[in-house]
Length: 486
Image (cartoon, rainbow, N blue to C red; front, side, top):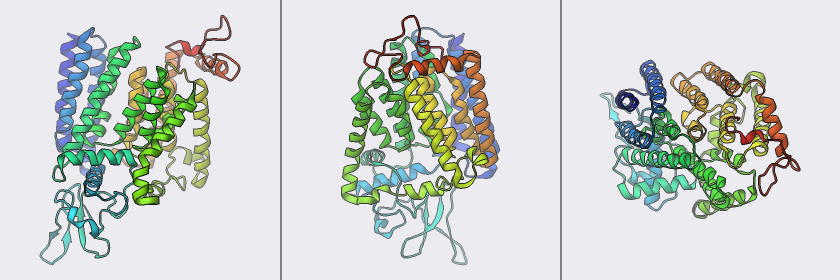
């Protein structure tokens, strides 16, 4: 009965996912209410599916997780991106690189790249009877060609600025386009996203089994609407960063710290924000992780630095300013209490305090909750507008089973559907309340004291021996040795 119920719920999610991809999006304000209801319904079906799976035993769990992931992922490929145009830039960067040109050298609107423009990325403008030109299509915007000032229609966002993506992301874009060519539209990156999602589901199943953790937890990744929408439909490269962070974390837990550092450096070279996963990997012999990460990051950047020099920074400085991080306006909740530029140092202090606490308190053999805390608190502090940043959180929700952390991704999703500072602030506040309340429910009122005792035992000269990880104080069990305590 549980297997049948799970299958029915997954089938309903599959149909609704395909319908949403084909018919709804956030490009039009008229679609937003329907998009909201579809999103909330998908999350409700997701929750019910996972609940039903918890009653399934044996190999059926593995089969349901993987088959469900494949079917849901295929439905997420039913149409083009419906919440973002970032994958158009990914495709363009790949096309440019395969022509032997650095993606950081020219902006898309530069006439030097005119011969590389394809119809699906640069459709011809529509000419009216009065001679005026317009650009039609929900993913198409109007811009001007650099130098000539001619009307240019494009699916690429910010066509007047250079790319922002780091080198490993650019290598991925070039690799995909090398095999499919410039004429293939959005599906190649969607297919690559599905392969990453499926491969990560299999990796999670194996990691959970090796640690005697419930296999159903892998469904928290494999069936997650956020993963399917942002990793497959909209093909955000953040998915690759999330996968590499998981690989880094799993590697460190089995003592392969150099490999973990390589994976971490690769994740940062996909998109810089995965650097926030580093503190939870540094508890034991962190220098190995740091050294390998820095070396990997540097080696990946060398070819692009040699060809473009300082241009490899791309649009990063402009993006940070555009998003309001330089003047502090982006920090949604903090800006209520520290308005203007005062928000930036407050945010920096909170991030440093969180990182230090994570480094001190992390159990090197079970860093899942530490990663949740570091990544989740960072997202609450920096308040991104885009839900794909929360992809970094999902692998560790799956490893720990702490479903309550999904509230952060849901709050950012809500902010995307209803773009408003008030919506964002309420989302952050509700997320904090939910996380505190559920943590209190999980561990009881003495949880803060338990965690503090665990931190004290990990301070230098106390608690665990740095080499062996064994408890120094005889007869004093470490709180982090209890899997039910955060």
